[in-house]
Length: 86
Length: 105
Image (cartoon, rainbow over all chains, first blue to last red; front, side):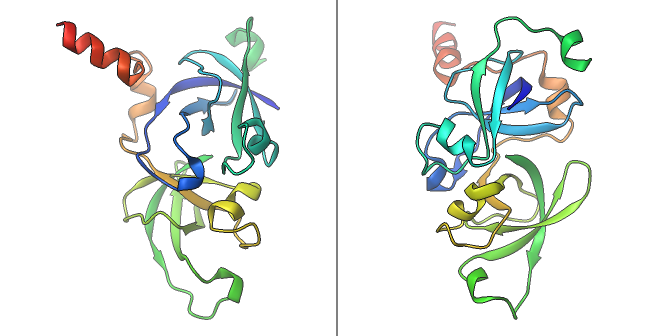
């Protein structure tokens, strides 16, 4: 698992049926690289979140038939930029 | 899932039987490096797309035995290459909430 920060929502109307209609968020890691994560939690931009990658991401999405390789597993209550970049 | 821009179609006539069914695209990530992705969605060159790896790439391409490690799963509706940095200040709200506010104006 990794720590990411939510940057913004992502709209992708044209998608594979295996992605269902799940919410997607653009997230950044501590070096500023952007990725897209499936969000079953409801995180808001600016939230620090725990993300789960690889095939565990599909279990984390709640349904193994959903094709994601990055899923938000939870919103971190207390975290800050300094601790993150350290 | 990672973000890519579609460069174009890749033709590889002689390919393993497992790679039939979908076309292949050359995609470029935001740093400029090229990769090849399977496209079950139907993208055009210039589209910004999201693609997944791992076992999700195989499943998204149709079945769990499909030999793909990068499969496009969606086309991004709006993506300005310089966008994410700039838009961070004015964050979008859930569609229902913003539509409601428009109505009240």
